[in-house]
Amino acid sequence: MGETIDIHQVLLDDLGVARQFGWQIEKIPAAENLNLLAFRIPNVVFSFVAGALLLFLGSWGRFSGRLPDDNPYRQERHQGDHPDALPTTFHDPHDIQAARELADAERAVAQHTAPADVAARIDALREVRSPEERVQRWRAGHA
Image 1 (cartoon, helix red, strand yellow):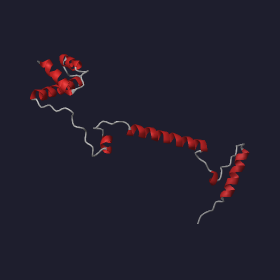
Image 2: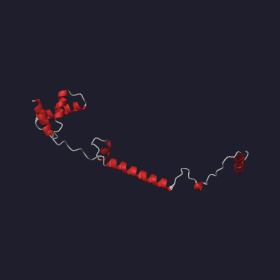
Image 3: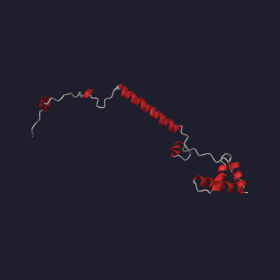
Image 4: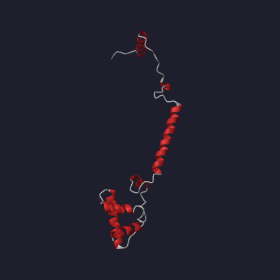
C-alpha cells in the first residue's frame, strides 16, 4: 500500500532538533490530567455564584416588575386575567362628550400638538385625580 511512519521516531527526531537549536521543551500532560481551560476550584465556585446571582436578579426583576397590562410578557403570564374595567362610567351625555374632549386634549398635549390654551387647561388639571372631578372641571372651563 503505502509507506508507514514511525511516530515515536519522528517525535524523537523533533526533540533532537529542538535541543540542537536550544529550544525549551515542555511535555504536554496526559489526557487524564488535561485542563485546557485552566479550571481551578475557585474559578468554578466564582462562576457558579455569579451565575446564580445573575439568575436571581433577572428573575426578581422579571417577576416583580409590575408590567403594564399591554406588555406581551404580562399577557403571557396572565392569559385568563382581564384588565380592570374603568372605574368611572358617565351617564350624562354632556359628561360623556366632555370626557372624550378631555381625552383628545390630553392626547394632543402628550403629542405636543395642542394649542397653548388647551395645554394650559390640561396643566391646571394636573393635581386632580378623580375622573369625575377632572371632567367636571373640564366642562366648567368650556362654560
